[in-house]
Image (cartoon, rainbow, N blue to C red; front, side, top):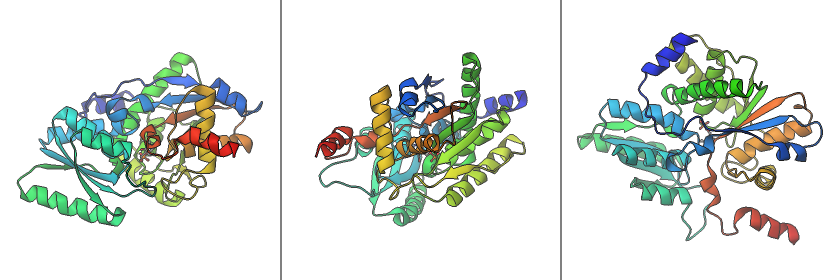
Length: 343
Ligand SMILES: Cc1ncc(COP(=O)(O)O)c(C=O)c1O
C-alpha cells in the first residue's frame, strides 16, 4: 500500500477541495425504512467546494493540474446545459486563470424563459459557452472547436466528458484512502457503498481504491441515471484498467452497475427518486439532486425493502452533489410535490 501512496503523491494535483468531506450517520432515515434496515451513513462529497462541489472536483484536481503542467492556455469541455462537470470545470478554470470553453447540449427537460442554475453559474465563472442541440452535435463541435482553437495558436487542454479518464479517477482512489482513515477513526466497518455512476470515473476510482487500500470486502454498487449496466460497466472496467496501468498494478476490473432505477431516462425525475429526495430532506435535512443521487438512493431504499440489505449491514451512501439541478423548476420541487399530493 505504501508504494501506491508514494506514487500517488508524485502525480500533480490541485488542492482545491475541502477534505476530508464529512461522513454522517442517517438514523432518522434508517427509522423510516423499518426495523430491519441497515445502519446508513453518508459521505458528503456535495461539500467538496469549488463550483458548488460534488464529485467532479476530485477528478478535475488531477486533470486540470496536468493542463497547468502542460502549460495549456485554454481548457475545453462538454456536457448537458445543466452539467455539474461543466460548471465545476468553469469554476476551477476561473481559479486557475485558465480560459474555459464549454460545449453544452440541450437537456431532456427545458422550460422556456428559465435558465438552468448550472448554466447561470458557468456564465458567472466566465466560461465561453457554445450551445448545441444534442449529444451527437456535441461530439462534432468539441472536435471542430478544439481544432479551431489549436489553429489559432492555443495550447488546448481537452477535458473529457465527466472527467472520466484514469487520471481523473485517481481523485476517487485518494477519496477511498481518505474514507478508510475516517472509518478507522469511527471504528466502523462498511459492507456496501452505493453511489450514482454515469461516465464511470467515480466508480472506477472507488473500485480501484477499495482494492488498493485493502477494503476488498466492501461491495460497491453503482446506480445508473441513464445508460445500461453493460455500457456503464464497460466504461468503468476500461477506466479501472487504465488506473492499474498508471499505478503499475493488476486490478480486478469488474464493477456492479444497476440500471433499473433510471425511470424514463436521463434528467427525467423518477417517482422512486422523488420519494427518496423527500425522505432525505424531511428526515435528515439533506438535499439530494433529482438526476443522479436521488435515483441512486432509491436503489438503496429498494434493496432494504426487498431484504437485500438488513440490520446486520452497514451501508455508506456516497453523495456526489448536483443539487443545483433543483433550482430549475416552475413548480419548486418538494413543495410542488406536496401541492400535488393534496389534490
Ligand atoms: C451529481 C453527480 N453524481 C454522479 C455523477 C456520476 O459520476 P461519474 O460520471 O463519475 O460516473 C455525476 C456525473 O455524471 C454527477 O454530476
